[in-house]
Length: 480
Image (tube, rainbow, N blue to C red; front, side, top):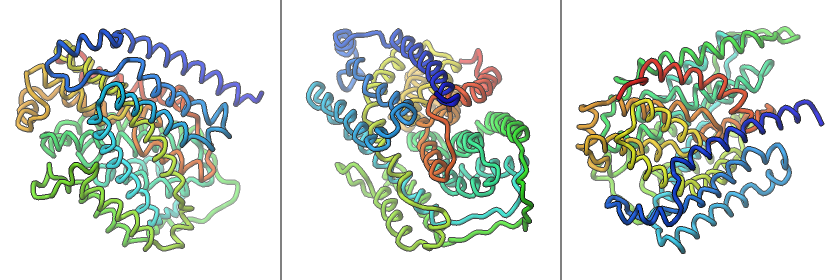
């Protein structure tokens, strides 16, 4: 057995111990059988449906563990059959909701979210694939820091997904003579997640907050002083990593110092995608709703961009970018399983958050939103805890004026929830949509990326958790 294999198995054991402990804690929080659940629901006037059995979280846990272990222990099987595994576990949950709970509303809601999710990711992926950026400059720790800082800033303009898809290929090519897995991991930390915390365009939970009534500029006005130290600390950690691993290429290479850009027309496609995000009946009243269809005008525009941008792309640019559809295919299959199997977990968490919301401090909202955003979809997690926080003041998250009043009453909870939902998405590969896509693109470029649990144990826990703890102590400890 190789040293790498032994190390991976050891790290997996540590991750499994952590996961089982997390599961035990969650069990104490949830701690109700199907019968107990039914009793609670009968006594709850706010519940729309009977809660699922806690046992129905098992398909999600199983999928998560297979994503973690498949590439390591049964790689051939996983690479050939992961779509079937994802779909099969999805079917288990779907049938349970249809047959036992008679609840199709939750399934349709999740389908709508999934279509919106994949429309955004696929349109940005294809549109950015037709853009070629070459940075003809020697890669140094300082140059890399500037590049990642630029990515963090523009992620608030084109979203973390847009910035990730636009910049990951040039970042890999710029570092081609010294690329290491940690380069990609810090790219995920900074560009794919933490960077996009300043505007509703930056990350999906913030956009949903905007749709619910949070003023558009509230985020940047109230989060910038939390965003800056977080970004500085992560960039500093990257600089030290890169400085200690700096190796000059054995061959002398001349650099012009110029930045080459091709595919200008695809910038128009990116602009169309960003504008399309706002084409929603909630934002613009005259936009027609296509209900009961599980998509709207926005998604139609985005899928149209996928077709048009690919058909009109410069073939030489696609070739230079080594563009193919495998990364988005992998994300589409895996996330249909994630979206479906996490429905029971989200509903159980929503119920518990509402039950105990009046007892939770800003710090608890920060950690609860963050940890759950790392392993579940951060958008519904954000909304569940926002609803719980507003419940402390007797406000309803579904009423736009209530959300606007909540921002005025006490915004410490909203700050904690907003920051955590975005920042903690970097803790795992599934924490945010672009994470998996960046990983997939990097692997197809020949970079040996760490496994799911190695990413968590070797990088997230060691680098991010101390930084997130500092942020908690500085801004949320003892408040609320």
